[in-house]
Each structure stands twice: as C-alpha cells, then as structure tokens.
Amino acid sequence: MLIKTDWSILRRTKWNDYAVRFLLGGTITAVAGLIAKEFGPVIGGLFLAFPAVFPATATLSEKREKERKSSKGLSGEKRGRQVAAAEAAGTAMGCIGLIAFAFIFWRELPSWRLSLLFPTAVIVWAVMAATIWFARKRLRPRPKSTSS
Image (cartoon, rainbow, N blue to C red; front, side, top):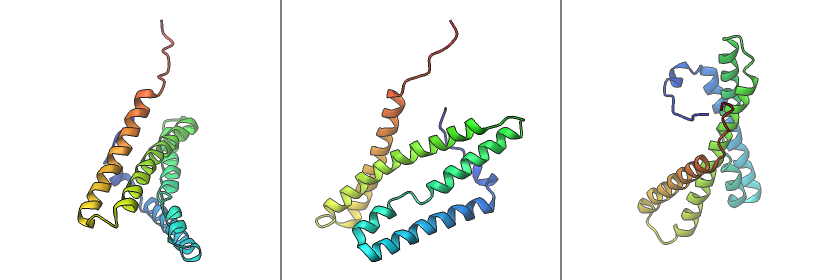
C-alpha cells in the first residue's frame, strides 16, 4: 500500500466528518482535563497525549474507503481495514516522535529558553517519526511475487 498525501480530500470531506472529529477530539481532551484535575497534570498529560483525532480519522477513513469500493460494486471491507491499519501505524509512529518531543521538553525546560526549546523539540519529533517510518518501510517484508 502506497502512503501519500492527498490534498483534494479537503474539498471532498463533508462538514459532518469534521464535526465527528471535533466532537471526539474535544471529548478526549475534556476527559484528559478531568483526569488531570483529579490525579494531577502528569497523569492527565499522559491521557492528553492520546491522539485525539485518531479514532475519528480511522473510522471515517475506513467508511470512506468502503463507500468508494461499494460504488464500484465491491465490498471494500478488507480495503477499509487496511486503510484504518495504515492510519494506526502512522499514528503510532507519530506518537513515538511525540514521546521524544515530551522528553526533550521535560528534560530541558528548566534550563533552555522556550524560543529555542520548542523548535528543537519539534525537529526532534519530526526526525524521530520520519526515521521510524523509513525504518519500517525498509525492514518490512515485501510480499513475494506469485509469477515465475
């Protein structure tokens, strides 16, 4: 499966898809705030680190792919799951990068200026996430060709 950026999706996305993302993301953020209020900011921050948009994105991506396939007379069940799995893999890689971002912030905030720390942490996040993505792409076994 080739993963690429498709900017045209912004024009095709329905308003209710954005509403679902907003509601799920807002709900997850509010729950993290309640957890932080009850158990403190460290525990609340762990829950806030949950990718708030991921559940909606995976669900909507799977639904969109099924609809696309069904318009061509196909089930789309398997392809929808593959798309959701690709979303999950990308989210996991981004989260590992966010762990690096948080670690840099936690470790260096007392001694670095924020104007220098924030861009540094963003670069660390991007490099970490991209490195994991390229490593996964390189190390992932390729399906063997059935033709001889």
